Image (cartoon, rainbow, N blue to C red; front, side):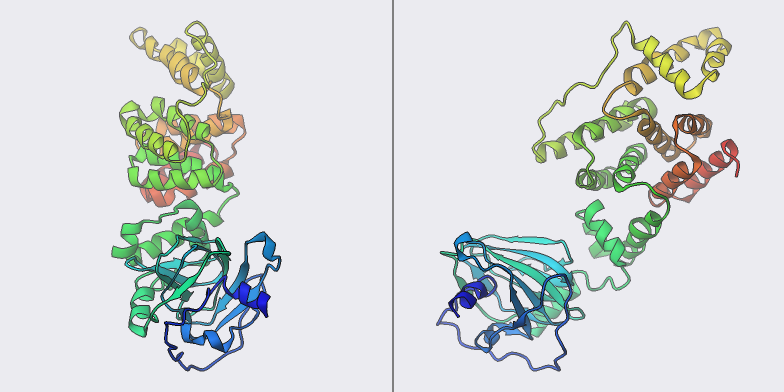
Length: 422
């Protein structure tokens, strides 16, 4: 019994004698639903019912009290929630099944889906429980168990609960599970403004960009995020770039790779379009504890940049480069020299990204800029020569379609079909 009480403190803490019991709502019961790999456990003892509306179940997962880290799986039936309360030592919740909510006093309720983590500081008044239409399970981890105490407060009444849940995500009844899951990875703070002001647009875009589009092709999430960042720069999409950059870091894109995407953008979109994104990137990387500047990735010198750049050009485009150089009018030969020494020598020879990835990024930028069909065709051939086939390039176009729109996407596909006929 002592062990049970100790583990119950993970979720409900020690009961203060000053709180008067409040009768729980009566509702038709159904068998408890297991929403995760963790057991549902038993109903909470009757002594705790004054602090819950609806039925909750408790499954202690840890038993060694000397570890000082009690963890339990708590399962709530639809509509069940606990009272407002606080913990003197704080608490951590990890959502593992179904759909639920967490709300701190004075803040908007937060929708909880599997994988979400809630860190509750000491003495913050809050409640948590299931959505009205879903069973919900979370792991409850008690912090500082030797000194942690609960203070139970008033119930979350029906009006408060309805307001909290109706404004925090349950309205998105047509948002697919895949879109929710990918959104949590790709856009950790998904379109906060759009979500609240234009929920229909939020649903349509999320289901398309974060589910339907990603079903096409075999690009991994890391590559999808890299080409999206490149496209965002070309489109001057600062808001989406911020969101995508956070998602890219979560997907495993390294700070060096992110910086190299920016450097790759300079010769193709121009410094005027790239400079602001360098500032945004530096701000976010510093926020993540990255020290700047990063290590150098240049492999050329003023003496070798032209030679190495020209060699890379020829490896990608073959004899076409010599023809372009010899056929250029005398007053335009300097541009051909710049292409070899600057565009390829200064930028594309850099380490940090391999040549195949750089060509995918260049393709992504060019189709996003629009009006660059001649260059798009040239780099389609360059991609093919380096090992990126038509299916890979078509997957990139599909990935970027929600961000660049249909006209530019269709132009890119027309270029693909011309260079690589079906």
